[in-house]
Image (cartoon, rainbow, N blue to C red; front, side, top):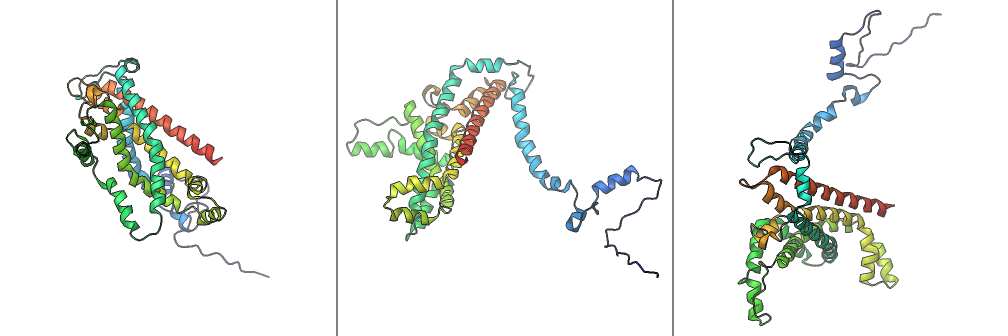
Length: 339
């Protein structure tokens, strides 16, 4: 008995050309099948027309921007750190590790490093804790609470230069704060907020904290939404007070956000420049005593007359290594906390 076999009807666009025995596809045809859209062997659905290079095509603009504005400047800085290049260009010669040896013996570099590290040591813990406490306060659903949230966030929107000028007016010898304290007979002489090196550094830290509170408050508001309210209710029924609930329920519930805020604040503290420049003028405080590492890099590497771009690049590499070490430490603490 003869039986008819039903041949499957090929889907349009998926027909495959059968090669004649003894012949092989040309190189041009193989390249076309790899690059041009078309059916892929063993694929079905949308994967028939998917090629390996399509994801790279979509990511190409971002990769190009990162390479041009991130990778290339970094590699160029590392190369310049081994030369005696000038800020305005010109002939540069290879000097090996002399810039790094000079840096290790430079007292101004160590002073700037001390200021940057001290800035991070003081600002980071306060910036981790104060916005969290502020977020707990404004999280309550009370009439008019939106106004206070907006008010606390307003400094984030202001320009750093405008904020610095405002603080100059407040902290000057004849500024608002000194004038009010003298009229209240609380002080006899003006407090040298903008002329004493330690007070300049502390005022700059206060400016950083004031301007960043609202920004990181938003981070914590998002994290507090993931803390179950039932835990607070159960703890309250067991007699736990507000402070105890804060330390034993709120803080563990937003620990990941705290790690993120600490990392971002630490990196920003090591890169602080505007606050010192606005409060300590272009010298970075009396005699440059309040200069941070970015400020010092500007002075030694970018001055068009006396600057040394090679030495400034070496200090930039040191700042990068310091920032990298802080980031790795934060990641390790996060992993230990998760385990």
